[in-house]
Length: 307
Image (cartoon, rainbow, N blue to C red; front, side, top):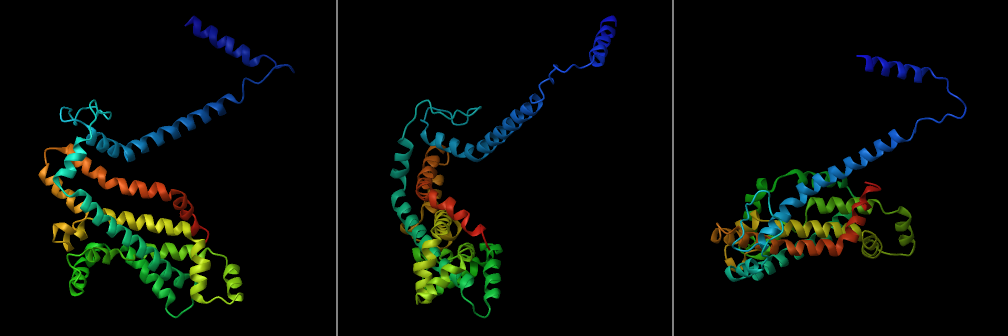
């Protein structure tokens, strides 16, 4: 009781002590510096949490694919670094199913989907952005509405169309629904809208035709958005599972996503082999993204200027 009274008296005396000209403020920048350090620590904490949620399942799957048969893959906490790393699981995948044939089929479907989306999407996007014709606004809203329609709603009609064209059980039938999408058209439309009008007027003065302005002037200026369309189209076609499962009958035409399901049925108790199969399916996507990442990040901002 006496100590608290003395401390209170000292504080009162210190507060009432007159300030002189040579006295300095008690470190005014320290609270601000502490708030800056706390904010920086919070940012790194949020980044770490986001990284764990996004990359954690992938790292666990990669670790599982490399673990030997004597290691427990369900340890808690998870052991991400294999004690006895091996590639035997990848060899078992290749010995069990024709994984390279399935990967080749998926590659043909994905490359064809990326090519057709870049070509037809850019042509439709250029028409919506640069050409004047009756019904252009209605066409724009029509393409926009297709983005919110789930594929399951139109799946039966697409199958009947593919059957009437004789494309059932063919890779062309797998490509058909993803040959061009509303997303590709709208991305390209925004990219063409961002081009300066003076560039087009200069090309008109040079006597170029509409096709020459599209192919020689506009297309080289939107290579970033073309990369975005190519990556998205390739990824969606490569990962698609439902439509190839419906339209394909012959196992020789199976894509990789459908073929891996047979792997899951054969090795239900061996998660290591299943994980190795999923890693094989992921490699082309990572290779494509890292090879085009420079154009990808440039293309993300191309349509943000206008549109």
